[in-house]
Image (tube, rainbow, N blue to C red; front, side, top):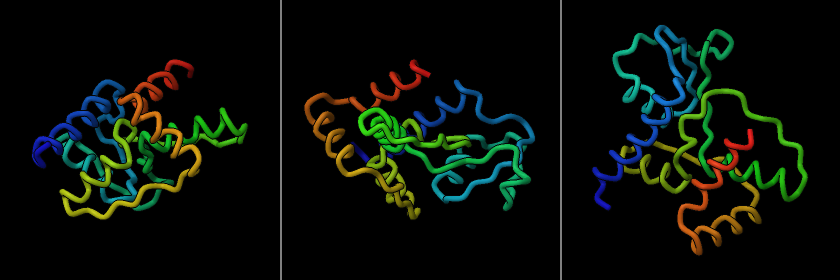
Length: 148
């Protein structure tokens, strides 16, 4: 896939998720820690009145770095290994894209991005399932959302 088409596709997917779930409103005070999320907020929200704050305590919305792989990993870790994982509170902009897509998007836009650490066993299981059945991660996300 061409670089520009890939970037448009990723941005379109994130934009659709923001619009459907109504994640941002007028005059939100937004705290963003990483540069990739900040770029998405700037590009997608655009002209909607917003302010960025440096202190998470003063913010009305806190954007956290959490991709589709992070959500799937946490769910399977809880399900398979019975680990108690506290839910991450905040707006998850990157929840519709995988780590691989986020890394490639960041590379194309000259932004530094490092994915969160994950359980290697679960990562291997997901990779094997993805090779056998494409779109497994996206289907797992829909299943997780329907359970909640």
